[in-house]
Length: 301
Image 1 (tube, rainbow, N blue to C red):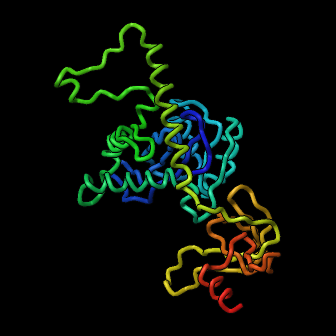
Image 2: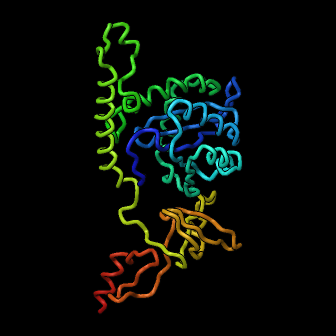
Image 3: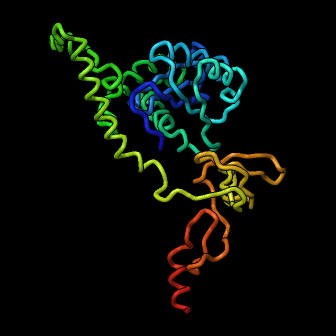
């Protein structure tokens, strides 16, 4: 995650989970929305993953509660790239970013939440797995009130400025009293939580990318990692292709049929290029050959 956000609600990462076993209510998918600043998670069980469903759910579950964000990130699924969804985001003034195809790390903040949801639901569903939507609301409640590994804070506390009351508070009669100056205390509490969250995000953000980002430019020759093949002996890379355009970490290139494709920089492998002035052979992506190869060449001098 390379984008920096200064407060919750400015950006949402969106993805869907499924298809899952159809429930008695007819639900088959889970739409997931996650705020990368606080890690707050919103999820809704739905029957379909079409553009209308995703647009309505985003407006009803996210915008109506948290306001209109500046931007969102989704995958390149047909529902997200449809005219209905794109026009809706345009009317709301939301910048729509598309993650690179087949590169889950591009939308990793919500992909990781999907795995957590699957693990939690699997512990409660019945034998036919037809009741998972009944456990979804409290599963999300539990995730949002568990301290995050990165921020060390519960997402709901970062959003609302306080921890939610649970049955234990009613039984033990333990409740926090804010006093008369609730507004001032809440603002100070949120400011303190958001500042702590910013610092934690800054320290951990380098872990989400390569140590040295691949340096590419238009005209470079590349090999591209293919989608996971069914045959394990099938080649892992395809190409060579020529880079046409680069937008952030997404690289546009033309395939064998001259169709414009998009892939993430991390899915690229540069083909050997000419030697530079220092005599070291380099790849178009700016990387040196393996250390073992450089040592062997040096011994042969």
